[in-house]
Length: 206
Ligand SMILES: *[C@@H]1O[C@H](CO)[C@@H](O)[C@H](O)[C@H]1NC(C)=O
Image 1 (cartoon, rainbow, N blue to C red):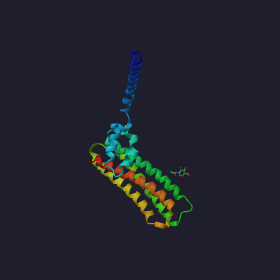
Image 2 (cartoon, rainbow, N blue to C red):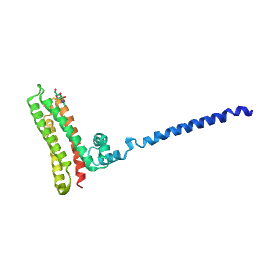
Image 3 (spheres, protein in one colour):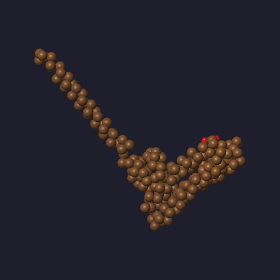
Image 4 (cartoon, rainbow, N blue to C red):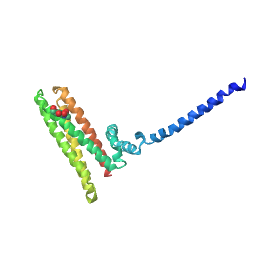
């Protein structure tokens, strides 16, 4: 082997090393940025860890992770956001049920169940709204009494959701599957969100 034929190799090695060096210098901004990756943020970790105490942790994380920047690591903020998400869902469900109640082809039984449900969901939204107002003013000597009120109202909201669904379960085969299905899926969602909010609120008074 003649020496000159070896020369291209070291040269290409140097070129390769230079490229590697350039690439690794380029990867520094990449990796620094990945520290700010939302999936590894401590605020998201807080949401996830707190959601583990709820009955529906996946629903909890799915609905609250987008508020991580507001919640940071505050259990009170987390409980407030959970309540607010639950209220929004109750309001939407209330609209859905109101719309269903206007359908002309409901049986008498069905119509009765839809109307009862409409009232229950509307009550539950009122209770959640009242709780959210009280949550915004949770300080001083009234803390314990206010916490008790909030827990009572949120529990009542949950009972209203259950009562609404019971009205349909009792109907069994006689109810049109469609109306029952729409109400069930919406109300179950509200009930899960409300149950989670209650769990997060209860932790505040522990
Ligand atoms: C209820 O019905 C109204 C009028 O048809 C419609 O604009 C609205 O989007 C409906 N709301 C829901 C939640 O389905």
